[in-house]
Amino acid sequence: MTIVPTEADTRIATLTCARPDLLEIRYKPGVHFTPETVAEVQAARRRMMGDRSYATFTVIPADADFTLETMREDHGDGDRGQGRVLASAIVVRSTLIERLTHVYFKYYPQLQRVLITDDEVEARAWMTAQLEEISRMGS
Image (cartoon, rainbow, N blue to C red; front, side, top):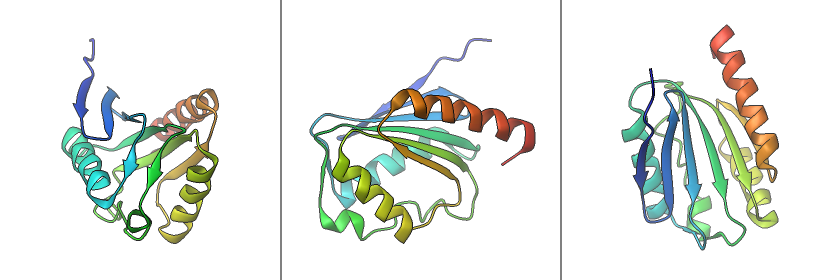
């Protein structure tokens, strides 16, 4: 059976359902994270993946920017406790955004497995290993 990826486009990101248990989120060059734009991506993610369990693979470009209000909001609150997001690999091409992502996740701890790196090859290998382990053992 061939799986045809489903795609959604928001103002700041393109989301692609790469396989039934993996959603890829690629933020666009010049992305500016605000509570509204992040909420738009989160809503698209939830619509695309529905009630199934899955992992996310996110790529944030080097020229990403943000507002402080974005850091003050728990964008994953609507998912926490439901256990649908099983693992998240985040590839960050900006040292500042990478550090802020670590701070954000310390302030808003995630229940899923999380990798934050600047190396997409490493992140893909990690994600493959996570999905294989999850399929063998469950979350």
